Amino acid sequence: MSWIGAIILLSVLVFVHEMGHLLAGLAVGIKAEAFSIGFGPIIFRKTIKGIDFRFSIIPFGGYCKFKGEMSEDGKVEDDDFISMSPLKRIIVYFAGPFFNYLFAFLLLVILVSIPSTVDLYSPTISVFKDARYMHAKSGSTLAYEYGMKSGDTITAVNGTKVNYDNDVLKLINEEAVQKNADNIKFTLNRKSAESGNIEKVNVSIPSVEILKALSGERALGFYFGGDLIIKNVVKGSAAEEAGLQNGDKILAVNNINADNIADFRPLIMDNALNKITITVLRDGKEITREAIPRPVESKNGTYGSLGIEFMSTPIKVEKIEGTPFPKSIPEAFKETGKYIVSYVNGLKLLFTGKLSVRENLGGPVRIIQLSSQVISVSVDRIRTILSFTATISLILFLMNLLPLPVVDGGMIVFSFIELVMRRPINRSVLTKIQAFGAAFLITLAIFITINDITQIFK
Image (tube, rainbow, N blue to C red; front, side, top):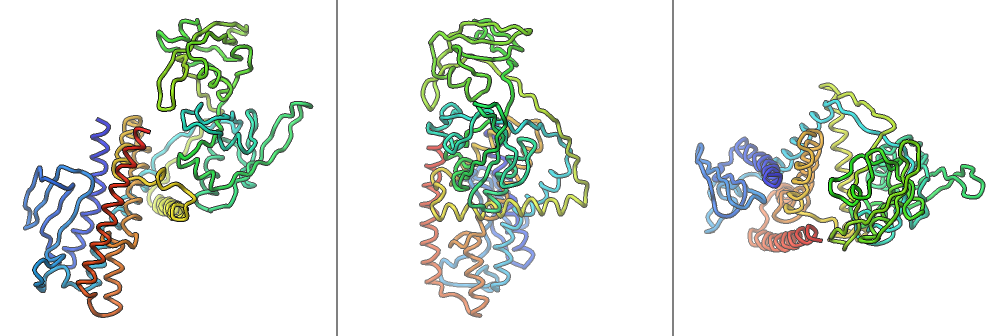
């Protein structure tokens, strides 16, 4: 059901985009012949006021067809699309992406007006050495590689003081993605192993490495969270057989200190089918139990699992009051601006090779996969769905304005050239450019689709 919801979500965004083209065309006096959601064989159609409205079987896109967009027999009539003034065509081309922007903006107006609560955790971190213990691609994590340690408390990011985990994450995003800072400097409080005194330590990580972590190319490697107190023991699990109980506080595994998730998880994952001892604190007393972690198959290999969930106890629950209308309007503008800056910076990094195209370029398959995950885990979390939908709509806005032949941005450029030159571009030249652009986009679409499918099964 979540996949169906994801396809519906993508179809809605395509509908919004194409409706922008349609309404703009009708507004400037251009006759529309067809309006389709999806491509391929038509599964439903209805003619309304001379326009053939269609639903087609392949939901990855859609189109709005105006009369005489391209002359097939060389004859051009006065009411054909290509006979219209360049300014009218620019209005029509721009309206599709603009409707995606407008839709995202309206969603954000609603989003910022909804009251919410945020669980805030201590900025004290646990540091994983290898990303495989975070169920990611094996390799050293950024935090470990650059010298962070479990027990460190982050007190500032690029000189700005932080009090909670949320402050850290916001500043990482602002500095690396929006401000395009060269490095992210973490100021840490660290307890000296020799003296026991608290020492101030600075760790700088290049922003490009942070961006790789944010995009999933590698793992950042630190985790916010406190004591390991068992919240739930799965019925029939290795933990239940060992006699572990809800409320137990993990202290050690095989007599090795394991009171944080980064130390605990490797000792369990690396011991599938091996007998281990687990020391816990229960009712003020230390108790040791024996357990044999069950093997679990994953894309990264086999690992051991006990079958327990830990409590997640925030140090503060912050209430965020919704921004009432009309104050929500400038707030929504600010949010769209932040995203646009982030997207443009991301494109720069892709084109300069600093970020992997394979890891970061996604198409409809990836969008549907991510949408299904959001919808399936967030049915009662309207904020998450609204935010995700607004983000995808803004992506469509920006992608369609790229100055590439065939897409809206490229057609706007051609029309603008005609407007400046005050004469049409040679149709033969334009046709060749569009054919090249179409071939490029089809090749890119095939690459992206194969890449999306590969990433799903990776």
